[in-house]
Image (cartoon, rainbow, N blue to C red; front, side, top):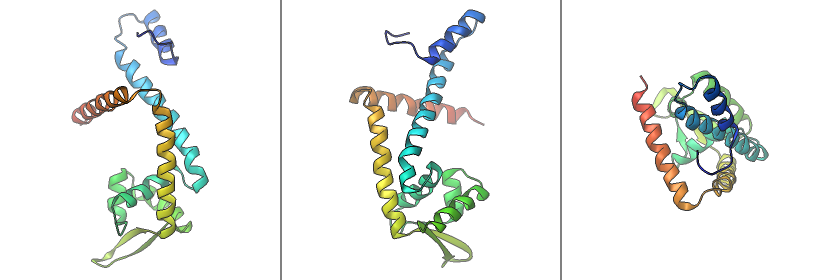
Length: 169
């Protein structure tokens, strides 16, 4: 362990070492912290998005439409696959966002059976403000690292993520 102060994951590792010294807990040290960090930051951005009337899941829908570029339109199927949601889960999010006038659903002019989902002007304004607020919260948390450390961490996490996706069957 480095010279930094111990955290909750270190305590768990110490407990395992006491009862099962045969275990290699390196993966637990990494993924335990990744999981805790993800939960903590998820909770933090959830609070940041609340004043905009959206949850993290709804943010994801609006952000996906925004990143698509003008005219900020995608099919529900493409949204579902991009966000790895079931169609039922996506329908619930779209219903709520449509009631809030942040997006609209309309017939797809290229497919009589299809729909398209488009950001409204209000939705565009909300996502542009919410993404800035969310990034500010994430940047504040990242300030615990210097620029070089943040870059190294991003590179390491990219490598780790690629390895987990390559080995997942």
